[in-house]
Length: 578
Image (tube, one colour):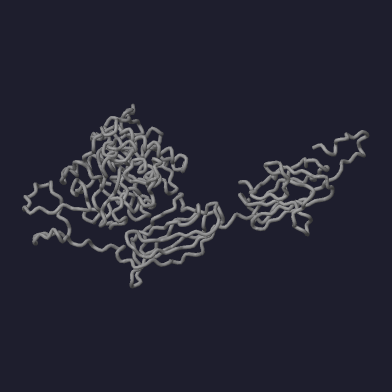
């Protein structure tokens, strides 16, 4: 995270210790460790990272610094009961209100996710909690009417100097830095994550990490990208940790989440205060234009006061002659050693529409010498005209290679579109040739059709059949849902040519049709055909029903004059009425 803000407080070891104690104290009293929230759920402050939280290399923010300010001691709607622990509380200095436009963005993102992924149960208060610790609610709501920050919010460059080492992945498109990545915007996405997680939240046709509507919706999708249910504490913890892999980060976000759940209020845009306490203790500063660092001063620096200066940079000049124009090269990362990607035994990728692919894609990162490379981020992207997705509904997934250099993509789920598409594997942070995998979605099929009911289907000339034909489709004994069906009135069982006389259906305009296409079974594998009518031709006729997969059923139809032998005075219009 770590937005570049107007003021940053340098803190020494003593200040950092106080901040740590404050987080611990709040976790014991206000945080979910010892209280029951407004929904009656007891939560755990000592939560540990879930394996799912570290399934991807890095995080949404690249584990950038964040604000550690705590919520105010008194919530907007104070609980009538005291803290369960009875532990004295360190009062937080955080501001209670949320700028109006920022608050609106969080609520709109929650509404969108309620429709897109209702099972995720994302509360807007979680977005508010993350927005608070990432950027102080977009620097106190300093945004334009459409939600765009009045100036870029940038974290420090991730050059390995006290932070993660993430070399440039976007050519400086989002962060203005063509050497290293920096977290961008009010929700502090690193460019490589924004490239697939970015969303258009305000409907302007753009995906801008500096727009709070776009960023809030992207964060919502990021937190819901797996099968997490955020009403479950374990899943909630995992989702937060996937945003920033830090136990202290988790505790701080949970503290703000509980605070906002108890109530908050809207304040005018631009009137909020910027937090002051940061997880990096102010030891690393960013410039307003990180791609153009200021030239070093020629004056010798004065000795720093104890406890206020940052630690010497590893690999710095030390006692040697200063050489500011030639900084030491950063150490090579595993990614730097990758020469190409190779398939790691992926089987044929085929699935029926709507089903999950039984096989997964496995890709191996390899050096020029053929050695496997661990801890490399591999991005899998679904390409082509398809509605297939990875588990969780996303079209992009990023996975780190394991100790054998292999990255296994999440499960693929076929959509309703049939045909071929491609899954492309690429290395994040390095330009090497991508590796394409072909996947195929086949149509749903049935192998058996049975008629529902056995009533004889008869009609008088010029009349209407009293019963409609209903069938059930199965495949290997199981329900065959959403299977394509065709119904044709044919000349005979031995001649499948469409009949030009006898029974018929009607189209939407009331015209005669004897072949119906575009039919499909329902979720229970059932289908009821439209009403049928008869012309003046009498005799026995055949209705042939077929499905994708080859299931066939012939239904006999009879058109005959009404039997008048049992009635002494038949109605003269009986044969023509329905």
